[in-house]
Amino acid sequence: MPSSTSTLTYESRSQTHPTAAGRKLLQIISQKRTNLCLSIDHTDPDKILTLVQKLGPKICLLKTHIDIISFSSTTTSTTIKSFTTKLQALAQEHTFMIFEDRKFADIGSTVQHQYRGGVYEIASWADITNAHSIPGPGIIRGLKEVADGIGEPRGLLLLAEMSSKGNLGGGEYQERTLAMARNKEWRGFVMGFIAMKEVGGGSGNDGEGGEEEDFIVMTPGVGLQVGGDGLGQQYRTPEEVVGRDGCDVVIVGRGIVGADDPVAVAEVYRERSWEAYEGRVKN
Ligand code: BMP
Image 1 (cartoon, rainbow, N blue to C red):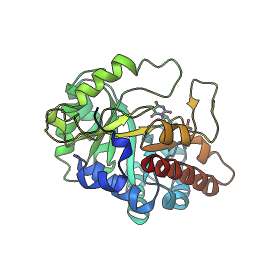
Image 2 (tube, rainbow, N blue to C red):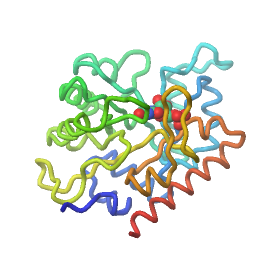
Image 3 (tube, rainbow, N blue to C red):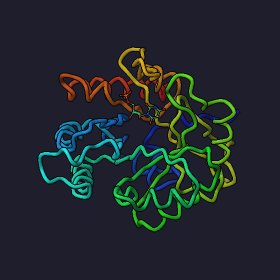
Image 4 (cartoon, rainbow, N blue to C red):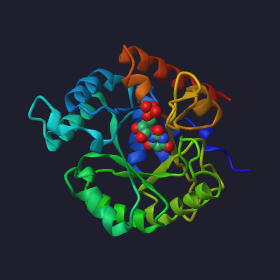
């Protein structure tokens, strides 16, 4: 039986992870003692910057949806470029990485333009992005070519399954996504998955690379209680996600952004997610 990646510490994985973005993230997680990713799902750029300034110390990763932000309604002259530059400065100040939740889903040639160009120029400021595996390996090849030209570590997560009720991921779809991720052509780029439980990993699962594989699993649909949002989102607790199901990073949006005291609530998520991890690696 292969051993499981989820029994290893973030610290030890930060030495050996096959992607530079993964090593950097695992180091931040380990040093800051936080496996919390804030999903900053707000539409006002100024409010986002104010919240991120407050919450930066609690998180290892900031997840954005750049295309939901209303740049035209801002009261200052914040443009897209100055906004992303400010986010990068906050990431530097508080030591977290940035993940643009773009969910690319087209042929390689089209996603290259979407990743590199357009109005958002995602590759220039987002350390991490994600993609659906549905188009086949060309989507990864296309994104990797852009990432290779940036000169900074860039990582990709594949969506193996989703948190929403009735999603078509998991099962055979997840197995085929894992097989795609294992191709050694993008060993230094595909850093993990969006999934609901541990995927692949451990000794004996060495793909084609001859070394142990290690996929970082990031998981949305996390709440302080089990529940839903009436639009298909399904919430599980940090203890279930990290402790029981072996996920590495918890992604929380409205649970923190919509709270009366986001900093206090973020600390509760951080603490519970971290303790669930500590309990997991002790066993
Ligand atoms: P919330 O915690 O408010 O439910 O937000 C979850 C966030 O994670 C949203 O930004 C959503 O787009 C994202 N997400 C998700 O909820 N489920 C998935 O399977 C994949 C996601 O990226």
